[in-house]
Image (tube, rainbow, N blue to C red; front, top):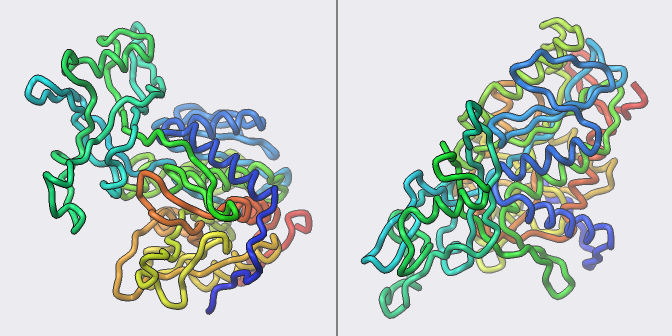
Length: 457
């Protein structure tokens, strides 16, 4: 099936540019997954969502809007339909909060010839190492601070140009332009200080940024992040570039669409997971039981039976939203001949015969129908048959909650770079599609799925 993309000249609307600008501002506030979760939490509360805690009994009511977090880095929000009951299904979007980065080890300071202090780091996820070299970086994450007999989690963001990973001069590595295999323990350590700096100064700086003593910090998860400001560029301002587009662009657009929904029969769910970049196999990852646990607690809170839960899952639908590889102008041969995608040409539907993506004929058809109703274009992506691509959230989450699901995303360049590039129209496209997704219901009758407006149920 050929991609359904527009052949009209580029014509960006003011609404599309505004959506892109607001998305980039969101990303700038989210240097780590912990900051992204906090930012999403704040947005939910501003729309009246009530916080639930995993260790407390939940009281769920029709029409209620709630959210719960795990590890301060994963968040699931849900809005119960005003007429939700035993025949209701779940309509879910899933994205992820984490991005490839360098994590700072517990004992961070490394002295070099009594002249330099480096920070000892290790790779988190699969990053393009070269993109991190010779650019200003800072440090952010979370710290666990002791307050009397309590241990409190606090966000950390040094918020200034703090470190840099210096590259060697070409004269020292004459073959560098012919390709380099980067050793993360040798080539990728950031320079923190010079003469007069000591190995313990980093922890002092982190403590000072929190207004606590060094001895009060009992644990931390701190990462390097790119300080570069996001920007819109191109001959017609058709492109945007930013750190962490994968996957905060989808996390943002899904959230905006989710907050527009006013469910009647269905239960609307927004999930943003941590640790997708390392395989999702953690307590806060899509591979855990967290999503299933939340859905089952909603079902029980509405007074429904376990049998009702199975029926609800059967009529449910998941949008797994994670960005996709656009055709690269320098390497067009790296993408499939007929199932390749472009920035600004609409939402990408991703398929894979080996089930790296969860899309199938049923879920693709239903999502295409949603996009038709929303008036946004779609594209189809598949990897070249002789190349292995990455996996994402859909098939991992669906292994615990066996529902209909489709993997989608937005086309981008330089995935896993410290600075990624996407199309200025596409954030708006995804917001519109998710709005429509939360404006319809998915019906199921003797195994046949359908779509109808929520108000028609």
